[in-house]
Structure formats: structure tokens, C-alpha cells
Image 1 (cartoon, rainbow, N blue to C red):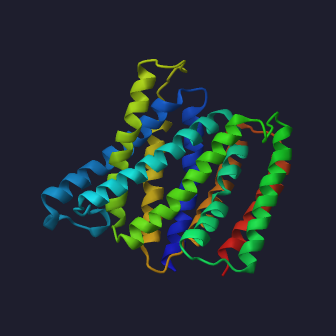
Image 2: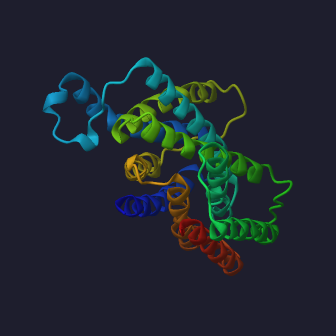
Length: 299
């Protein structure tokens, strides 16, 4: 199953993306970091977009060719960008204020919400083993709340935990929307990714300009090399991800759990690079989380 391998590649890159994102937002203004990251992705796709529109017959490979689409599909892709933009705004602010080894596992619960939504709206039916996996993931998430208290993080009262949960829910909705765009609407992966990247700049621009004009108290912005790296890592991770979903045999309820295995890369990086504490109990929770994710994957 090629789409499984593509999903695993995406998971590895997502882990590296989270590490770069933490470096970019740590003690830094969030909105300009987010804006310049999405701008990097859009600029990377812009030459392919222009070439595809002006000389489609001369384009060398279909993997990067952006197909012409009608107004309805443009509107759907703009909605995709708005959904992801909302998820990222909540997620970036949460990541700035939470330890990476807490934030990443919260985000890793996204498969639960994706599966539940897929059951409700797409008719996908998890088996008993997958329901067991959902229970284990929920138990691991609950255990993380106790570990978080050692670092002064009350999961019930900490607003940044709430921000990350909201970001995760938006992300789960986005995963289902991706399946609709790529399988039901039959849009090609490069078409989705290119226009999504362009429209994401449009979505984020008003927030960036409002920050720049100082419409609210703001943090100082410092340019870092990790900011464009965030955009580039996500671009490649999403390329693998969209290509996987476009496979007619692919199941979003399987792809989503596989991608969340990126938490292993993020967890190790948080300990090695950012010297985060309480790694032993967190490791136990993440091991349980991965067992749950594996059960979600099994048919």
C-alpha cells in the first residue's frame, strides 16, 4: 500500500516541522512567524502555478502540475485555507506557551476526532480493536493531565491547553475535508496544495497587518532561519499527505493515526533540543498513545 508509506514519510516530516515551529515561536511574536511561514510555502508553489496556467502542455511532470478549476472549487479551497488558518492560529499560540512534550501529544489525539467524524459523516466503521484504540488514546491523554501538573499545567484551567484542543478539532475537520476535496471532488494533490497555500496567505494577511499596526499588545518579532524552514517542511509533508489521500483505496481514518506518529520525533526533539523535564512519565504516556494509534490502524 503506497499510501501507507507516503503517510509514514509525512509523519516523519511533521515531527521535524513541529521542532522547527517550536524554535520559530519560542519567545517570539506568533502571527508574523505564521505569516512568513505560509508565505514561504506559497512562493514555493507560485512558479508551478504560473507555469501550469500559461504552458500546461510543456509541464514536465503531473506531480507538480496545477490543473485549471472553476469558481466553486476555488471557493472550496479558500474554505480549506480558512479552516487550516484557524487551526494554526490556535495551535501556534498554544505551542508558544506549552512544553513541546505536552503540546504535541494533545495534537496527536486528532485521530480520535477524525475517526468519530468519519463515522458520523462518511460512513466509515471502526472495528472493535479500533474502538479499543480510541479508549487507550483517551486514557493516555488523561494521564498526560497528571504529568502536566508537575510542570504547573492544569489541563482544566490552562487556556493554552484549550487552544491546542480547539486547534486539534479544527485539524480533524480539515482531514475529513481533504478527503472530500481529493476523492469526492477529484481535485489533484498539487492543485489542492498550490491553491491552498496561496489562499492561506490571503487568510493570514489581515491578522498579520493587524499585528503590524499594533491593534493589540504584541510581542517582539525576531527573524529566525527556522521560519522559512517551517513552511518548507510542511510543504513537503503535505505533498506526501495529499498524494496518499488521493489514492482511491486510502482511508482517512488510517492515514490520520499514522501521521500522528510524528509525536515520537517531536518528543525526542523536545528533550534533546529544549531540555524538557519529566520525560519518563511522558514517555510512558506516549507509548500508550502509540499503542492506541496502532490499534486504530489495524483493520
